[in-house]
Image (cartoon, rainbow, N blue to C red; front, side):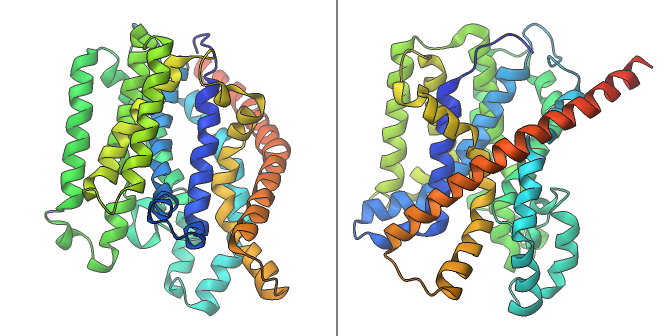
Length: 373
């Protein structure tokens, strides 16, 4: 990997995106009367699209080499590094959520009992997003990791496909893919025959190919960035804030705006501008995102994201059902979110980081030995 500086502002931005998803799943909008605020809090699940764009950008920035179609590491080392990054916390979350999943299927009848055994096979293998009935099983946020793993698998090939192309042609291709995918999802010709109607929403929402344009745009922006096409720092910071305002406007003003302003296609472009602007601004701008506490929260954002639904189930069962605690929704969320952050810190430092090092140290040398043979 080239010796490129860390983009601390993007690390910190991940925390705010993860927090937005937590807010949406908790249903915090119920506590407010403002229509705009309700929309902000309800539509903050769009932050998952931000993660896809950011993932593409970071993969290009971290592993892309200029002047060659090859990554800075071999594909097997790349896949090992990505597995070491996502799997430890992923399996911790599945373990925490296992009682929920088993109890719900066997006794609560939600999801259907016939989904239990296939789910126990598909979800640990990150295959659930490919089959609509299983997309949200076991741990709802895990569907996006199923999509992400697909992106990781194809990234070495994808880099070879884009590395020699011009910036202009890549931007045209990115926008074309975004528009075509949006058109298919809004008017899915032939989907009725391909997917049983009860699962069409899952297919259109979670199937990996529908999210590939977001990742691809991130890769293209990352390539343009390392080619030196970054904006001047002041313009980068301005771009970040304009994109931020557009994001808030498109989501908060949905009652008065066309629906397309807050769909994946529009938000992919907005998030791409936000990420490119923040990266271009550098450490001298966007001071809030470059503070140590913000970077620390960004580092644990993946744990926050993947753990928050299993922890929310246990929070509701223990605090509200067993203990019968009744508090305002705002206080309820504040204490719950504080607990999520605390447990995410523990998982990050006691499980994620040690396991990542252990996996890389143990298997990387074996891959190098096999390559040498």
